[in-house]
Amino acid sequence: QIMPGLVRRGILNRRLGRNGGYALARPPESISLLEVIEAGEASAPARPICVLRGDACTPTEPCRIHPAVSRASEAMRGVLAAANFASIRNRAS
Image 1 (cartoon, rainbow, N blue to C red):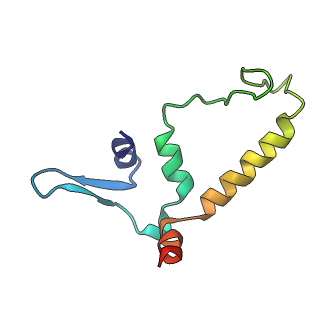
Image 2: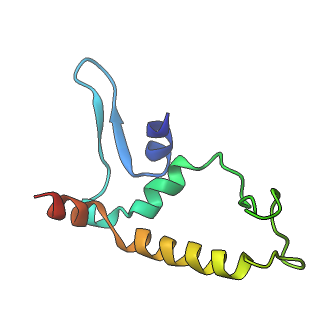
Image 3: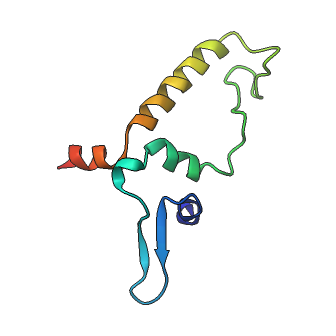
């Protein structure tokens, strides 16, 4: 079910028919892992659930661990944005 989202975001091309399938729409070095993950999470809630409250933190009343979790989340997004399909392919070789 992720494939249509990847096509909509211009990450994949889809070819119909007997010999159809999917192929990258752009060079692998221009496709980040973050982009692929975000395409797959298009239906996920915009605000993540707080691990302490069980509901989303609010900007005016964040939980005690919100700053640390936010920094960790931004760091992870940075790593995923920097990793692209070409770098993954090169490491697997």
